[in-house]
Image 1 (cartoon, rainbow, N blue to C red):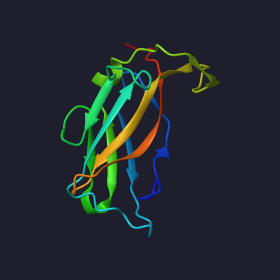
Image 2: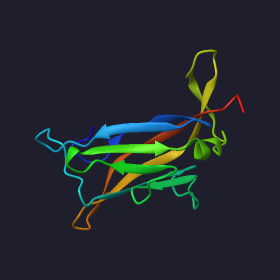
Image 3: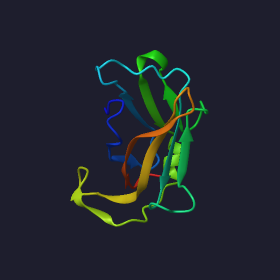
Image 4: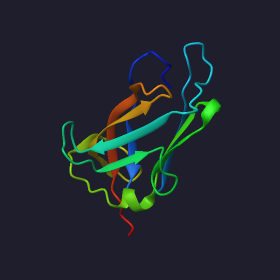
Length: 141
């Protein structure tokens, strides 16, 4: 995971439509110790493209049900929780990835882009991660 002060870390991930997904990480400071996230808040938006006026999904640490971000205080942990209800609403609208992503030859599709914004306990705003979100379409309904 990125360390404090190192800028925005690139991280791409794939969402299986209709499935629950949890992405866990620990934010480490420059000395390699967990960041104290007490008093921090975080928000992540997925948009079809940079500048898209309407997000496909926004999650935050102010929620605790559905899709949300769980912060681990002094442990420095961050968990991005995507609920199956939200992932089931995603539609493959982008181009297929040139790579075969799963067994059986099913392709993943570009869903959009995201960034993970944080606000520290002094009100300073920064970005921890950013990247592409791919969609593995749901076959079983």
